[in-house]
Image 1 (tube, one colour):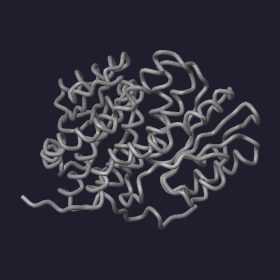
Image 2 (cartoon, helix red, strand yellow):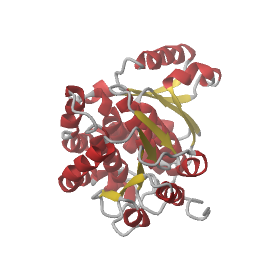
Image 3 (spheres, one colour):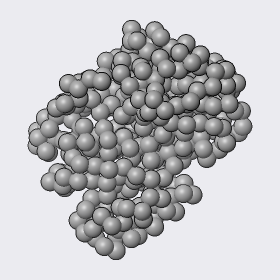
Image 4 (cartoon, one colour):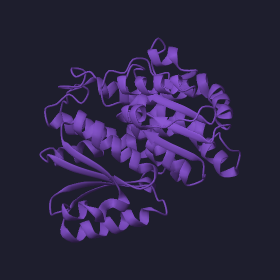
Length: 338
């Protein structure tokens, strides 16, 4: 059978090379940034959409190993609500375009308050690149598809590279060592997971509402899957949540034939994910399970978002295709500016 080919297809394939080039060009620079951020009592991670999801995953991964004060804000929430402390705070801001109005407003707010800023962006000539105190440039070339594939992966890798260089414990070094394996693992997963997820997408093409949940760093991925992949890419209604929140709301909407995407990284906190799965199985929920150990990726579980996102990209790509949608296009994004 012949399938339509959208820009997102090629951008999925470009991810390994984008990761390798970003590591090659920016690794030592990111280590220097980490040395600067060691000085700060408070670290703020800011982004919107897919970029916000990378902030959530990084904060929650770090939280398993460190008690550093790291918080996450979307751009305008940071702009309007964040109290800043000059000299004791640093801000890492992520944006594919470097022109996201929300994130740019947050950058300028931080600068006005004398707070050190670093942008992570894919565009060398962007406002965020020019205005931040320092910047990491992800090496993806232009990304067309709105939901973000190669820019998501390289942003997430850049945040991990910086944040896991904040300390020099063996646990931190192990994460960084395994991060080096991600480009090759990504290349393998791209080849091996397309067909199965195309079949899965055809099975679910007529469903209009999806829930997605995960624990720890996988909450950030569930946020991306729901907010930018399902809603923007496949035009499906979707809602993300932490696994621990299943019994505080979703348990009343988890009904027979309702699809729920479960992300399992094998964390101690995934004990709660497993309880939610057990309950859902009993009542006939349409369970869609993405499990770290199913992908033969010999890396630290804290890197689960890097592993699980690849098969999910194929699932969303073909879910859009079978629904007659281009996963890279939008109806309203870009028309509304504020």
